[in-house]
Amino acid sequence: MNTQEIEKLKSISTGDLATLGMNQMVYLRRQTQNDQVFWSIHAADGTEMARLADRQTALAACLQHELEPVSIH
Image 1 (cartoon, helix red, strand yellow):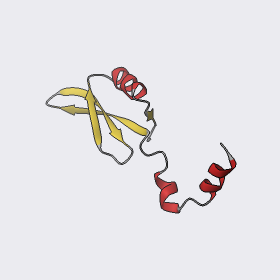
Image 2 (cartoon, one colour; image 1 turned 135 degrees about the horizontal axis):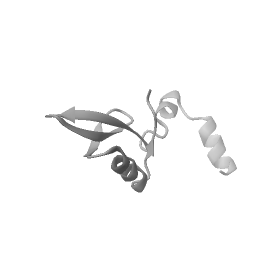
Image 3 (cartoon, helix red, strand yellow; image 1 turned 30 degrees about the vertical axis):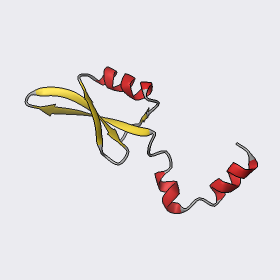
Image 4 (cartoon, rainbow, N blue to C red; image 1 turned 90 degrees about the vertical axis):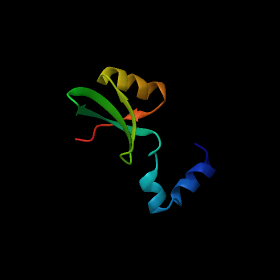
Protein backbone atom coordinates (compact mmCIF):
# COMPACT_ATOMS: atom_id res chain seq x y z
CA MET A 1 0.00 0.00 0.00
CA ASN A 2 1.47 3.33 -1.02
CA THR A 3 1.23 6.69 0.75
CA GLN A 4 -1.56 7.94 -1.51
CA GLU A 5 -3.71 4.87 -0.75
CA ILE A 6 -3.09 5.28 2.98
CA GLU A 7 -4.14 8.94 2.88
CA LYS A 8 -7.28 8.01 0.94
CA LEU A 9 -8.22 5.46 3.62
CA LYS A 10 -7.72 8.03 6.37
CA SER A 11 -10.41 10.21 4.81
CA ILE A 12 -12.96 7.43 4.22
CA SER A 13 -16.49 8.27 5.33
CA THR A 14 -18.28 6.31 8.06
CA GLY A 15 -20.78 5.00 5.50
CA ASP A 16 -18.05 3.84 3.14
CA LEU A 17 -16.19 2.20 6.00
CA ALA A 18 -19.33 0.30 7.03
CA THR A 19 -19.67 -1.21 3.56
CA LEU A 20 -15.97 -1.89 2.98
CA GLY A 21 -15.57 -5.50 1.85
CA MET A 22 -19.31 -6.16 1.59
CA ASN A 23 -18.94 -7.38 -2.00
CA GLN A 24 -16.42 -10.02 -0.95
CA MET A 25 -18.03 -11.42 2.23
CA VAL A 26 -20.76 -14.05 2.23
CA TYR A 27 -22.38 -16.37 4.73
CA LEU A 28 -23.85 -19.85 4.40
CA ARG A 29 -27.20 -20.91 5.75
CA ARG A 30 -28.63 -24.41 6.15
CA GLN A 31 -32.25 -24.44 4.99
CA THR A 32 -35.07 -26.87 4.42
CA GLN A 33 -37.80 -26.64 1.79
CA ASN A 34 -40.30 -29.41 0.99
CA ASP A 35 -38.33 -31.77 3.25
CA GLN A 36 -35.16 -31.13 1.21
CA VAL A 37 -32.07 -29.80 3.00
CA PHE A 38 -29.80 -27.41 1.10
CA TRP A 39 -27.20 -24.75 1.80
CA SER A 40 -27.67 -21.23 0.53
CA ILE A 41 -24.99 -18.60 -0.02
CA HIS A 42 -25.98 -15.09 1.04
CA ALA A 43 -24.34 -11.74 0.33
CA ALA A 44 -23.40 -9.61 3.33
CA ASP A 45 -26.68 -7.71 2.96
CA GLY A 46 -28.70 -10.96 3.19
CA THR A 47 -29.47 -11.39 -0.50
CA GLU A 48 -29.55 -15.08 -1.43
CA MET A 49 -27.02 -15.74 -4.19
CA ALA A 50 -27.13 -19.52 -4.67
CA ARG A 51 -28.48 -22.82 -3.34
CA LEU A 52 -26.33 -25.94 -3.21
CA ALA A 53 -26.90 -29.50 -2.07
CA ASP A 54 -24.25 -29.59 0.67
CA ARG A 55 -22.07 -27.32 2.78
CA GLN A 56 -18.77 -28.50 1.30
CA THR A 57 -19.93 -27.64 -2.23
CA ALA A 58 -21.22 -24.26 -1.04
CA LEU A 59 -17.85 -23.45 0.56
CA ALA A 60 -16.01 -24.54 -2.59
CA ALA A 61 -18.24 -22.29 -4.71
CA CYS A 62 -17.48 -19.32 -2.46
CA LEU A 63 -13.74 -19.86 -2.68
CA GLN A 64 -13.86 -20.46 -6.44
CA HIS A 65 -15.47 -17.04 -6.87
CA GLU A 66 -13.01 -15.37 -4.46
CA LEU A 67 -15.70 -14.77 -1.82
CA GLU A 68 -14.89 -14.91 1.88
CA PRO A 69 -17.34 -17.02 3.90
CA VAL A 70 -17.74 -15.58 7.41
CA SER A 71 -19.42 -16.89 10.55
CA ILE A 72 -22.49 -15.03 11.80
CA HIS A 73 -23.17 -16.76 15.11
